Structures are given as C-alpha cells and as structure tokens.
Amino acid sequence: MRNKKCTSLFLTFLIASLTITPVYASATQKKITEAEQQKTETQSNLNASQDKISSLEAKKGDLEAYLTELNRQLTDLSKNLSDLQEKSDAKQAELQQIEKELDDAKARREEQYESMKLRIQYMYANGNDSYMTMLTEAKDFTDFLNKAENIMQLTKYDRKMLDLYKETQQEIEDKEAGVKKEQEALEELKQESMDKQAEVSDLVRNTTKQIDTYSSQIDSEQSAAKELLEKVNSQEAVIDSLMKQQKDEEAAAALAAQKAAQEEAARKAQQEAAEQQAAAQQSA
Image 1 (cartoon, rainbow, N blue to C red):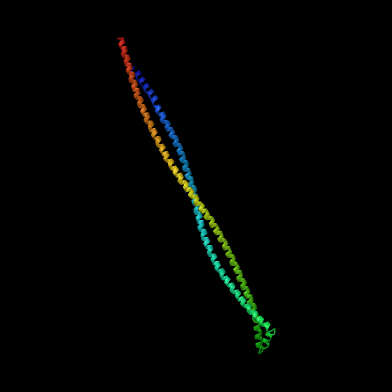
Image 2 (image 1 turned 90 degrees about the vertical axis):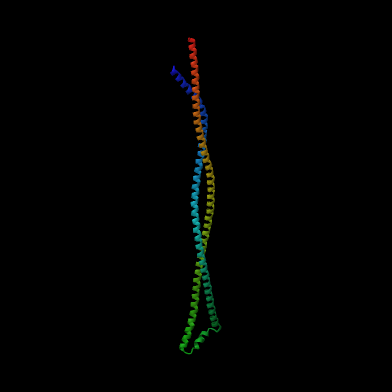
C-alpha cells in the first residue's frame, strides 16, 4: 500500500513538471533563437564590413607605395630639368661667345678686304705700269729683287689672309651651327622633361585624391563596423540574459511543479485517509 502511494506521488510530480516547465521554456527559447539569428546576421554584416576595410586598406597601401614612387620620379625629373637648364645656360653663353668671335672674324675679313680693294684701286688708278715703275726705279739689282719680292709677298699675303679668314669664318659658322643644334636638342629634352613632370604631377594629384577617398571610405566603414560590434556585444548580452532567464524559469517551474506535486500528494493522502476512515466506520 505504501509503495503504491509513493509511485502515485512520483507520477503526480512528473506530470506536473512536464506540464508547467515547457510553457516557460518554449516562450523564452523562442526569444533566444530569434536573438541568436539576429546576432548571426549582425556578425555576418560585421565580418563583411571588416573584409571591406581590409580590402580598402590594401588598395590604399598600394596607392601609397605608388605615390612614393611618383614623388621619387618627380624629384628625379626636377633634378634632371635643373641640370638641363644649367647645360642650356652654358650653351647659350658659349653661343654668345662664338657669335662674338664670328663678328670679330667678319670685321677682320672686312678690314682685309678693304685693304685689298685700296691696293687694287691704286694699281688700276696708276695704270698697269705702277708696279713696273717701282721696279725700274730700283737703285740696283739687289733693290730690284727686293722690290719684286715685296710685291710678290704682298700679293701672297693678301691671298693667304683672305683664305685664312674664310677658313676661320667657316669654322666659326660650323661651330655656331653645332652649338645651336645642341641647344635645340637641350630645349627638346627640357620640354620632354617638363611634359613628363606635368604628367607625373597629374598622377600625384589623382593618386592623392584616390588615397583620400579610400581613407574616407575606411573611416566610414570603421564607424559602421564599430556600431555592428557594439550591436553584436549587445545581442550577446541579450542572449546571456535570456539564457539566465530560461534557467531561472526552469528552476521556478521545477519548484512550482514540486510544490504542486506535494500539494497533490497531500490532497490524495487526505482523500485516502478519509476513505479509509469511512470504510472503517462502515465496517464497525
């Protein structure tokens, strides 16, 4: 009889706990599941944001390395342009000196030419016999030879000086042409260097602008990632709170079930005692 009463008490407690506990657990577990799904979605968004930040930082790093190379090129181009300007200035000074030498040579040529014209004019003005007269007026044969030699030397000198000045003038003109050609080549190199410098400067400006754009995007994405991380942490706190709530509810439900089972057992015990008392009275 006592074993039967214990079995009945246990079944009553088990039924009560199975009936009350799932009611609390089902509602709280649903909230936990929803919170975990929201956290998973937020975490996924956070991972995507962090991946985007890494990608942007990699692109920014590549551009910064490229910008460093561009600035190095600009420095080299600036130095090269400065060297070319110095060479151009030196060639300009050389050209000015050559032009001066050419002017001097032309002046000497003109002076020689004028001297020759005067002698020729004198010769023709005094007739073809002027040189012959000079020779016939010689005091002796030695004087005659000296005069004849002087006439020949004078003529040779005029021819030699004329040829010499022509050669000198041609040499200076050739040198002038060479220097001008070199100067033109230097000017072309200067222009090419300036064009390249302008091109690289444009690349520097555009690259700097792109780096600034990436920096702005990174800042924006980092702010978004920070908010997502805070949201994840908040959702984790909510989940922890719900799980604690679930445990508290399960404990409370178990306690309530135990109390209900005890009350039910007491009620049944009272009922059985009453039934036994009534049966005893009837027997008496």
